[in-house]
Image: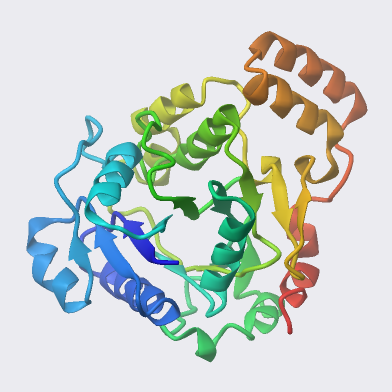
Length: 312
């Protein structure tokens, strides 16, 4: 299957230059025949982007604050790229060498689906090379040394989908709070299978601050753009990785997922997004509070076991 990587990088300056350049080089090493298409780049970055072997996407719509919209990105990419699979990633993600085979396996099971997964957050003082062969077996040691930590299921940094399948997605502002929740919510409502590949492929998130955004981290996750994304979700409930419809196991088997064992949560997701009934979702939530969460513990409590599951 042909793959196109999509992203919307920051300006290539300061620490962001090295972080983004490593990520783009990593994607090309993992999938040598793929194309990397970048959107919303600063005009002065053109030469840098071309020198990295990436291409510039077309001019697309943005939010009022100038942040690119997810829908226009995927629609433009569908027109200019013939790849069967498009993968939108934040431009700070490093992929393992088996990442593409895992994604392809998902699309051999489902012709159309959304593949997402958790990430490992690197500490500020940790820099990995672009080549996954240099680091993909060092995750347990990094975690044990306090230099890396499994991010919770509330954040997704990559989205793999078949070309054209998300063309009708609403106005979602990328890189701002709840944009991942909004993408997941759309797929749940449309009956598009959402596959959690967390325990089958491991991705690393390079450390960065939010100095490039006026208002910093608070503006990213609680500002006007984040509030707009939450309105797109259309629910007080923000679906996350935990609410994927399927889990991909390391042995390649695909199994149904019921909110990782939290049955009350699974019922609420079904009511709000499959049945499209917020009132029913409210009733289930009230009942669920009486039961409390049942099932898997919070992900950070099993970080080491999670990482060890990737050893071959």
